[in-house]
Image 1 (cartoon, rainbow, N blue to C red):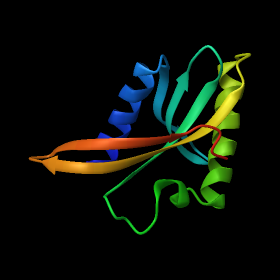
Image 2 (spheres, rainbow, N blue to C red):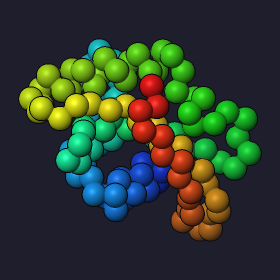
Image 3 (cartoon, rainbow, N blue to C red):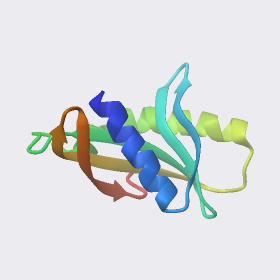
Image 4 (cartoon, rainbow, N blue to C red):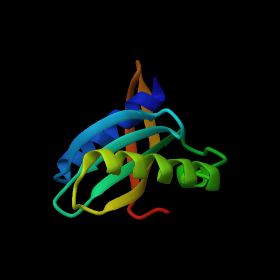
Length: 117
């Protein structure tokens, strides 16, 4: 529930920044899932979303280890082959932190990292 709420928050954030959401939770049978694929006039952004509680031991960006980075790059490459666009790809990380929660409604803050890896 927390992870999905974080992804919803990031999708809304991207829309507010002028992006169009192309896909969410796109699965590549070999490399895994792409959380959000979004497009603006400059690029196709492949966004790995990591949602954390305050004071987590590992930040969202730290949780995207080398193995996850490689799987995401490979999945993004496969997605780009099917998309057939001239826009360049960009690999981003959205660190989402829970500020507060009441009755299942979360308040978040975001640290959006373009070209994270």
